[in-house]
Image 1 (tube, protein in one colour):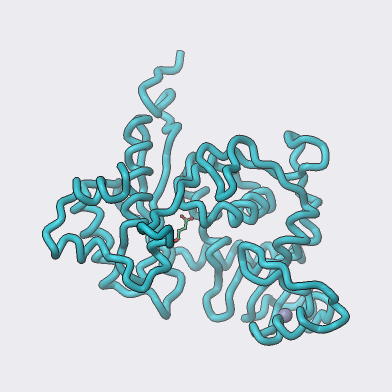
Image 2: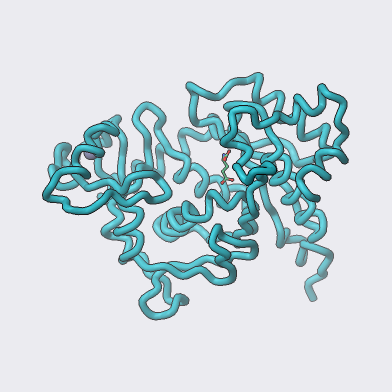
Length: 307
Ligand code: GLU
Ligand code: ZN
């Protein structure tokens, strides 16, 4: 008989979440809310709260910001298992996955600039306003059609895009007919989405398109790393802001493509100021460090974010 204690069944952790900040700036109230909420949920379930440093952007990531993250989180009263996963130490894993997908012809090289894409989308023959997906403008497929780089050559050091047009091959037998992909939402999407979220390959092609899985000079992308890392860390529940709700659909497609489990998701509302603006987007979004310097306590921060 399996012993059950909180979030563990027979020694297996059944609730493991993570907080995954990028060390490209100071943590602000929105980060504090996400971290405190995820930690609280994990502790309530007798589970684990892991920390992951998302530092694939070598231009913008800085060791000072990383140190400040540990410092702020400890000050908030949070704790986590060591060692902390750092994405900059996992570039080999990302590259091996890309090489496999490249070999299976799921990827193609794209040499378009942002301006090229905007121009292609506004060309009269397209006849449609550009669709804004979770990754910005839906890529018109210029390089896919052009086949600039032979698909069977060595993997080039360019941006690599996923052929979303093939994602119908990854169908899920558990989904209802016509809805090929799904995930479980325990929180809420920006439009109140909750429960099983189902979506089709067709929607992914039309509204998301050929996403970039490797940025030029970076060797990976947010979407690819986050999916591989959540699987490697054995994450069962992803707790994060509603701004990533739509991106979750990309993550589910990648999980199916890579044969990885889909965690349960809990997207939470974003912390807003009195006028309803997102804090993170504000120039003067106050860093936790500034509240600290001004004498605030961790309980003040909790109160400020409504916990
Ligand atoms: N690194 C991302 C950020 O700072 C978080 C990604 C995630 O939670 O999936 O917004
Ligand atoms: Zn291109």
